[in-house]
Image (cartoon, rainbow, N blue to C red; front, side, top):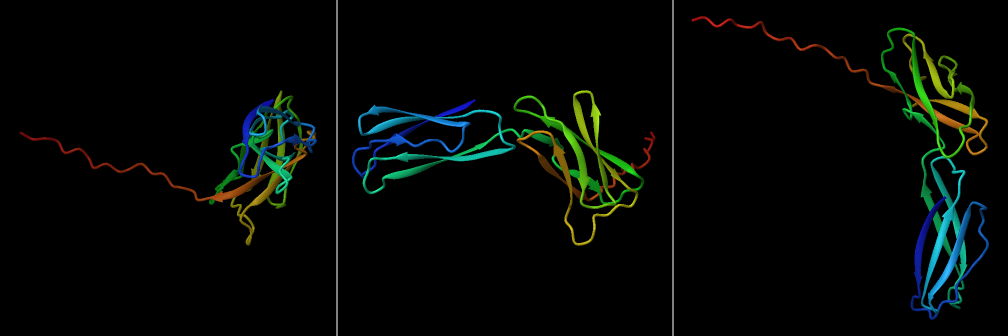
Length: 196
């Protein structure tokens, strides 16, 4: 569970008489404490797991007791560690593929018991993807044929992973071309022997 405390103070609209309205999410709870009557409140906001993948958004509605603004909305945003995270985040395909290759991406779960990736499909029939199980770990394996190029007019190929996890029923991993860098060993001149 994640908890944050906010201090709410009176503006120039007069004394406050705050009242929380029911939360739109069962995982988002809040409690309100009056510190100085009509002037200052503390608001505890808690968000309970299971966490959504990467980010959460919600809102709390508060009756203010101020006639000019009788209702206020407090937006709740959070960044959480992704429930299912591919590592690396994208499949990087070299611009020059000299032979049939396999590229692997580790699939990591967080925020409770791990789910299971059931299948992987690409939106390009020339690039195939499978899921490899190794005990309690899974990897995305992308099969890249010799000379493969991302289809003309596309910036990337999308690989869709389907899971048995209700919070992340599907996840898209991008496959992109990266420029191959040729590495060469610098040539050193032959040593010049010192002569007396």
